[in-house]
Image 1 (cartoon, rainbow, N blue to C red):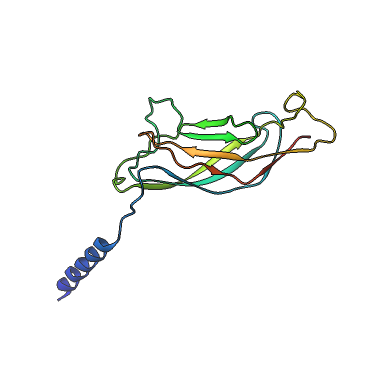
Image 2: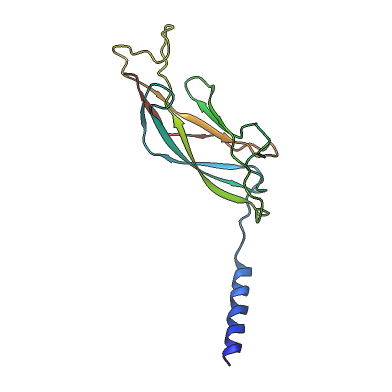
Length: 163
């Protein structure tokens, strides 16, 4: 009798597991901005201040990340003030085991401080009386190995102290 109950429970669990719908993501990467740890940095040397940006991603064919021999970046961060790349990052290849129906994950991105930018040919990172801060946001997108690109997400505004 005890054996029949065990077989019954195993059958029941397999039946329930078969009913759970696996995720069905599109083959293009999806990127979602989740927030930042703070909204202010002080301009300065490369690693004098930093901010963490939190992102979530999905990809239907699971081909996020680059091979170890590939030097091309796949996560791109654009400075809103210039339209130029602030950072290009190479995400390592993620394991493909079980990724047939797609993958999802989270990215914690650490970005170091940048300089305040001024008009009138004033050099970046200058300390100018009367200009205490600059404001920027980052545009971020992700590219998978097949070349599919996510939509661009935008961070909240970041205040950059110019002192």
